[in-house]
Length: 195
Ligand SMILES: CC(C)(COP(=O)(O)OP(=O)(O)OC[C@H]1O[C@@H](n2cnc3c(N)ncnc32)[C@H](O)[C@@H]1OP(=O)(O)O)[C@@H](O)C(=O)NCCC(=O)NCCS
Image (cartoon, rainbow, N blue to C red; front, side):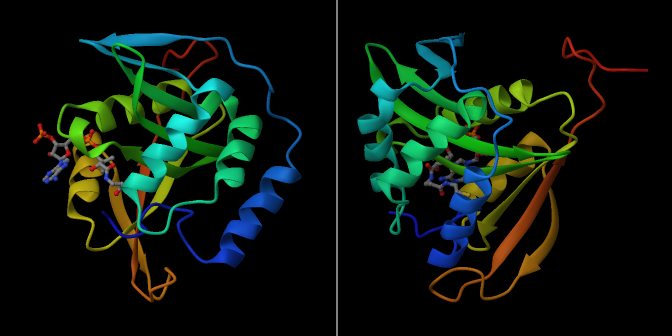
């Protein structure tokens, strides 16, 4: 099991701050229609309430300090357009990711893939789907990852994230976070690039 890694995987106070941040945000839509792109027998689609138990399972298996289930449920309510699951046919949730958006910046809060489904491109597909679905106003996706989480760092670098700094003593166990950033090119409302 990996130790607590992703951005947001910080202290209880940071989780509380995240709650507060989300609670004060009223600008996000609160419904999401099913949607998805096929990846062989993997479908990456918006998460729904019916997926929550499976998402908790992914979270609990992926992290030694999993997020509280009520936080994940709140994230689904507040960030429906940036909360995705990877469904492995038939009807198995193999992974999920969620991000929050604020102004020009989005923040990857969590990504996890069940161990038995790793190294099949699911993590990559989840982040690509997230990047494609960020609001046109968002110019960057940022994250924090434990400095020793080699597999996640390689995944992010292969997707184009850059290492932009360190935060010492970031996690509850005192370990250091690596800050990473993905810069999005200007997009018009249809998702195309502007001149
Ligand atoms: C990180 C994680 C989401 C990656 O999911 P995944 O579905 O296995 O990722 P992908 O299959 O898309 O991997 C893409 C690339 O990342 C790199 N990578 C992924 N896992 C790796 C590993 N264990 N060792 C080395 N490189 C790895 C490889 O370059 C891989 O490409 P390749 O398989 O063609 O060599 C998954 O390992 C996980 O859930 N880990 C526990 C939770 C976690 O750490 N989340 C990140 C928090 S910031």
